[in-house]
Length: 338
Image (cartoon, rainbow, N blue to C red; front, side, top):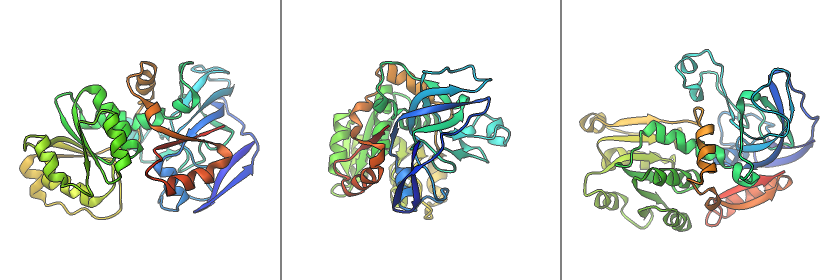
C-alpha cells in the first residue's frame, strides 16, 4: 500500500508499506478521504511541538471497514465509518472523570502516531463510528472538524440567548459559526481575510468584522448594545486578540473559550477576570462527539459542503499543502481522496 510520509518539515514522500495487521479488538480501514487541518500544516512546517518525524499525518479521515478482529462487534466488513483520532489511556484522572480528550497520556492519530494519509490503517474498533450511506466520502471527511465545534459549544455552554463573538474565520471558525447558528444565537465573527468574512456572511453571521480595517472593540460593543459578548470563542491563537477579548470585549459573567493556541505569554490583569467574574475555558479535540455530529450531518443541520473548496488525490498531498499556503484567500477546506 501507499502512505504519505512527512519525512522532515517541508518534505512529503510517497512510501510503500505493508498493509497493517490487526489484533482481536481492531479493524482494518480502507481509507477513502481525509481532510487537511491546520495541525497537519503545522507538522508539515515543523511547527507542532508534539509531532516527530517521519510521520503519516491526517486525523480527519473516513473509510470502509476491510477486516474486523475476532472480538469486534460494533462494526462489520463493508461498513462506512468515521474514525475518532483521540486515543486515551482510560485510567488517568481525566479519563476517570469522563474527559478522555485531555488524557494525561493522550495520543492523537496523525500527530503522536501515524494517521490517515495512507491507503489502509489499523485502528481500535471503538474509534469507529458508522456513517449514513447518503453522505459522500468527501463530505464525511469533515465530520471530525465539526466535532471540534460540538466540543466548543459544550465547553462554552452556548444557548440561543447568547451574543457570540468568534475570533477567526478559518475552517474551524466557519464550522463553529454554522454550529452556533444552528442553536440560534446572534454571532459576530472577525478575521483579516476578506474572502473568509464573505463566506461567513453567506453562512449566516449576523456581523462580520475585518480587524485589519475596522475597530473590533467598537463594532462588537455596538453589536451588543455596549454589554459585550457573553460568549467569546477564540480560534486565532493570537495572544493580542485574546487579551483584547478578556480586557475589552467580554461581558460581565461572560465566558471565553480558548481553542487557538500559542506558546507566547498572555498578559491579563487579574482584576479583568475577577471584576466581571469571567470564565476562561480551555477546549481541546473532542470528547465522544462523533455520534452527535454524524446526526447533524444526517439531518442536514449544518452545511459542510460550504466549507469544502478543493479536493486532491492523496498522491498530490504536497501540492495540496502548497496551495493551502499560497492561496489563503481562496482555500477553506481541502480534502484528499483515496
